[in-house]
Structures are given as C-alpha cells and as structure tokens.
Amino acid sequence: MNTEKIPVKVEEKLFQNRYRVDAGRPHISIINQDTCRVECTTQECTVCCPAGCYTTEGNGQVVLITDGCLECGTCRIICSTYRNVDWEYPRGGYGILFKFG
Amino acid sequence: MDEKFDAIVIGAGPSGNAAAYTMAKAGLKVLQIERGEYPGSKNVQGAILYSKALEEIIPDFRDDAPLERHLIEQQMWVLDDESYIGTTFRSAEFNQQPYNRYTIIRAQFDKWFSKRVQAAGALLVCETTVSNLIMDGKRVIGVQTDREGGAVYADIVVLADGVNSLLAKKAGFHAELEPKDVALAVKEIHFLPEETIQSRFNIGEGEGVVIEMAGKITQGMMGTGFLYTNKDSLTIGVGCMLSDFKQQKITPYMLLEQMKAHPAIKPLLAGGEMKEYTAHLIPEGGYKAMPQLYGEGWMIVGDAGMFVNAVHREGSNLAMTTGRYAAETVIALKEKQLPMTAANLAIYQGRLEDSFVMKDMKKYKNMPEIFHNNNHFFTTYPELLNRAAHTMLTVDGVDKKTKEREIRKSFKQRRSLFGLMGDAYKMWRAFE
Ligand SMILES: Cc1cc2nc3c(=O)[nH]c(=O)nc-3n(C[C@H](O)[C@H](O)[C@H](O)COP(=O)(O)OP(=O)(O)OC[C@H]3O[C@@H](n4cnc5c(N)ncnc54)[C@H](O)[C@@H]3O)c2cc1C
Ligand code: SF4
Ligand code: SF4
Image (cartoon, rainbow over all chains, first blue to last red; front, side):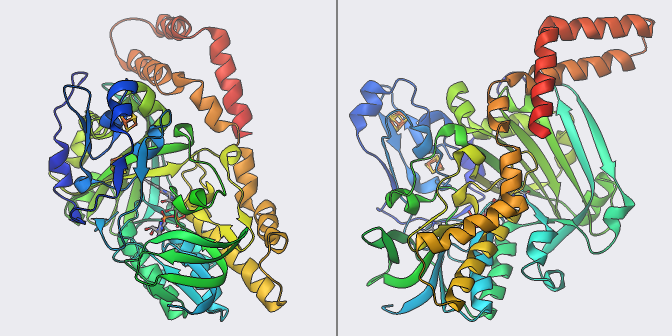
C-alpha cells in the first residue's frame, strides 16, 4: 500500500484545536543553542514533536515556537543525551485547551 | 490563600478527583489545584472507562456521568500493509446491565467527576499551576502556585499531576523519565452521525465497539493502534514507545496519517469530520520503573506513579484506585490523629501491595523488556500471519498441504524455529 509518505500538514491538524496562547511567554525553551547546532547530530525534537514545534534551519540551528504545543512532554524526555530543554507548564489557564481530549 | 488545609491535591484527572472526593466526603478540608481552564482541558485518553474502579467511589455514577457507549464487542487486529487478520469477541452478556466498560470523552468526563468532587465539599481552584512544593527540610508542607501570594499549606500533599510529574522531579523524589519508560500517543476525534456509526459497526443505540491494532501500522515500533466508537464520533489513534520514536526518527502525525490510510481503516472513518488532534504520554515503564510513592508529607497517585498496565490498556482505573487508597490512608491517619510521616504513610504502599494494583504491576514486570528486545512482534509476525491467511484463503489450484508447507517455510525463513519458540516462551512467561 502506501509505503510512500503521505504528505501531512500538522498545521491543519492543530487548526482544529483551541489554544489560549500566553503571548511573549513561551513555557519551553532550549537551554543552549550551540548544543543543538554543534553537538546534537540527531535532533530528535525536530522529528518527534507531535505538534511540529521544533524546526531545523539550514545551518543546524534549531528554532522552537511553542504556540501549537500540546504539552505532552516528548521534547523534554527525548532530549535524553543533552537534557537541553527547559520545560515548564504554561501559566494556569494558558496553553492547549482540549474540547474532547 | 494563607489558609491551611488537611490535604492539597494537585491535579483534577481521575486520580486527583478520586483522592479529593474520598477525602472531602470523609469531612476533611481539601484543596484541589488544577492548571487547566476546567478539569479535563489538559487531559487525553482513548478512552475506555472500566466501571469497577469508579463504582467503588461513586456507586451511582451511571445516573449522570457522560458515558458514550457501553462496549459489546472487542476486536483485535494484526495488520500488514494491505490486510489484517483479527479476532472478534462479541457477547450478549456485555449487553446486560450494569455494563462493565464504556467509551468516554475525557474532557467531559473529568468535568463531571469534578462536579461530584466539589459537591462532596472539596475546594477546587482551576487555572492555577503549582510551580513547586514547599519543603521544610525533607517534609512537604505546602505548595507554591503561580497565583499572586500563591503559597498554600496542608498536612499532606497528594501528587496527582500526571505522567510528566514535574513537581516530584523538582523536589528530587525521582529522576527524569527515560524514553523507554513512556509511550507517545497521538489521536484524533472524527464526528459522524450516530446512525452511520451504528450501521458501520453493526451495533445498536448505545452499544460500542473497540478495535485494538498491532502490526505494521507502528512501522516496527513497539506500540498499538486503537479505534473506539463514541456516541457520534470515532476516536482513532496510535501510541508507541518514545525510545522507538527516538531511535527510528518517526514523526508521530505522519504515523497516524499512514495508519488512517490503511485499506482496512480508511473506510471506517470515511465522511467523518476531524475536530481535534491530541498527543499525550503514557507511563509504560511498568513495575521496574516505578518511583518511590510516598514520603514525609507527600504521596504520589495515578500516572505520576507509573500506574499503567500497558498490556491491558488500564490506566484510569489504576489512577482512581490509587487516588482512593491514598485518600483512605490520610483519613485513617487523621482519625487516629497521627502525623503524615513517611513511616505512617507506608500504609498506602501496603494497601497497594495487597490489591490487584501491585499484583498486576508485578505480574507484567518483564513485559516492557520482552517487547523492547523483540521487534518481530510488530514487524515480522504480523506480515507472516497475514501472508499465511492470504495463502490459505486464495483459491488458486495449489493443494492445502503444499500451502501449509510454504507457510511453515516462510515462518522459518524469516525467524529461526528456535527464535520463534523463544518468543513464544517469553510471551507465555510474561503473561503467566
Ligand atoms: C491515548 C491514551 C489512551 C488511553 N486509553 C486508556 C483507556 O482506554 N483506559 C484507561 O483506563 N486508561 C487509558 N489511558 C491512560 C489514562 O488516561 C491515564 O492513566 C489517566 O488519565 C491517569 O490519570 P491521572 O489523574 O493520574 O493523570 P491525568 O489524567 O494526566 O491528570 C493530571 C492532572 O494534573 C494537572 N496538573 C499537572 N501538573 C499540574 C500542576 N503543576 N499544577 C496544577 N495542575 C497540574 C493536569 O492538568 C491534569 O488535569 C490512556 C492514555 C492515553 C494518553
Ligand atoms: S534533541 Fe535536544 S539537544 Fe538535540 S536539537 Fe533537540 S533540543 Fe537540541
Ligand atoms: S511538549 Fe510535546 S507538543 Fe509541546 S513542544 Fe514538546 S514535544 Fe512538542
């Protein structure tokens, strides 16, 4: 069957969700950008985040935009070699708001 | 909020609700803190509700709980790329009240449970994230929240804060989770008219079906897919170990999309309207990965304590049961006017050990390793089984004996006889 990759836009999925974004106060951050760029060759966060919040730039730089974050915790745990993700919950009431869950 | 409470419960999922309800009902002064806008707004589940655990807390829950469908049929599919081979179990007994299992929608269910908790007398504060535990030496004496002047104190703090349980980590009660100890699940909810679901799944009003799936849909990762019927929606999702996602570098939503396109699954979803996409971790490390569950002035319940039976897809029931046990421990100590020291709270561990909770956790303690070390269960076997069925069912002039020989040969080619037997033995040992 479909061994070839089906094109998926994660934005289209996230569009169905409700969020209350805490503008200007991201709840997750990368501790050391150089670690991502220079040391971490695998950059799993850019592949495995279910909301596609992490992207890699041409120069190896990793960019994190938490607006679509589902607050799952994957990026924090998957970065097990470098522990380079500073992960907190959003302030009370902010972030993802599941209608169904 | 400079008051002192008998107990603070962090989180309003099933474990926190069970704990807060039980303590409030016994007359204790309980504060429950939830970071979401309302209980359930941060929570994700498949979801099957097992009646027993809830019945023991709220016997009349069926009167007004938002239950979607009671389950009358369970299907297990083993899929390769084109096909699936499966078993179906449907029983009229499942159609007799009181029903044993229901599908639920978590955001609605948690909200309902929370109303009951508040009616029992607990004070619930939402939209408030607990940022730290307040310690006096080794003893937890309260919590710090992100509200202004947000320190609150209590004799006991029950950590019901779910799989990520940041607070216990910050307090040094246990280390960070490892990728091999959690599964990442992604899922979607698709809305369809009630009648369409009923005719598509051959069920009557209020009746439901569960389909559990294993095989090539997880692309070699240890995990399963699932499809549940709700009243007027379907839940479809897939969960795999995070260590496998990490190693194989698979993108979760692509995995889900591939699965939805499987020729056996696609028609079941046809015409539905997708209204939400969610992701959540499931603590599947099992008994060996469980943290210390109590200490000076604190206890851990539910997902935060790794209380999940991955083989039987049980989590919410363990959450409710552990929440209740923790609450009953507090009630017993309060009655005797004993302090919430680690030595006294050890009753909680005892209750767990004596019950199905720890017995089951121990029974399956080797399961994670067996699956981790044998990805044949998720790749080779599904393919072989499906090929075998295909060979036997195709009428093409080849006699059945020759076909059987071919099937046996294909099994042995892909995995040595010794390996096959070894896998079977390990599975048997793990389930025994
Ligand atoms: C996809 C999926 C399918 C599942 N299917 C099933 C199933 O079919 N049957 C079953 O029995 N189980 C199932 N489970 C497991 C089940 O969902 C969990 O075991 C259960 O939800 C655990 O309950 P809990 O109360 O411990 O944690 P949670 O439900 O996660 O609740 C934790 C609560 O704490 C709050 N919180 C966390 N940190 C803070 C903080 N710092 N301050 C304030 N509040 C905080 C959260 O917002 C949340 O409300 C499934 C899980 C998933 C992800
Ligand atoms: S996995 Fe960790 S270290 Fe690697 S790129 Fe991502 S955040 Fe950086
Ligand atoms: S918590 Fe989950 S959704 Fe949010 S950025 Fe990390 S991996 Fe992505």
